Length: 222
Image (tube, rainbow, N blue to C red; front, side, top):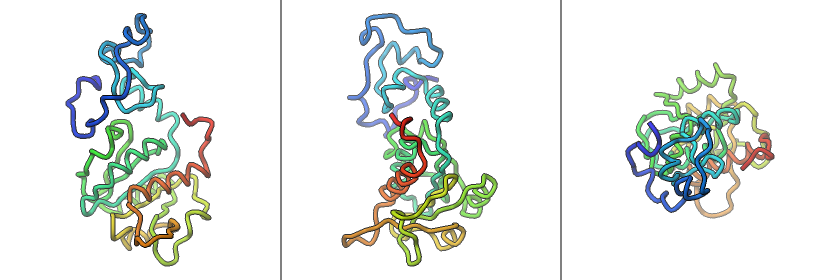
């Protein structure tokens, strides 16, 4: 099923001003013979929240192309209280081509903040922390908890493992004690104001970008 044939949902609100019209209107020629292109999008236009390089591509082609360039870091967030920040985490993980986003606890989460990027990002559910840690062990991933707690290492000076799983807690309580004890290290984000904690979605973006700054090939960025 093409992207244009799928039912609209709240994650698509506000997208339509972006994108391009039908191929013929945009370029004045017949579309190229490229199996990556979606016939419906070529005929109707492409208003999705994707970079220009992926205009008119099928969702499957986009995912396959990102899979060839994904980075070896994973992101996990605990969802025991139906955290509203998960959509933002997914959207940011997609922007940085994370290997996968892991949601621990409740399977349901608010997809509106993802802005449809959940269609292009691998998302894995784990019922509890033990299951997540088992996955990390099997995949050889170093678990790095991100939380401002005593004894944490400043993210600004820490050297993040290349093959790692960045673990975030819920808004307010942060990473659960059991999860933190299972991590190889806990890093904190420097703060200078009055607030006790940074929004979980923002913190995830800061930590992911720190990994990008240390390990990514910036010549491959859009």
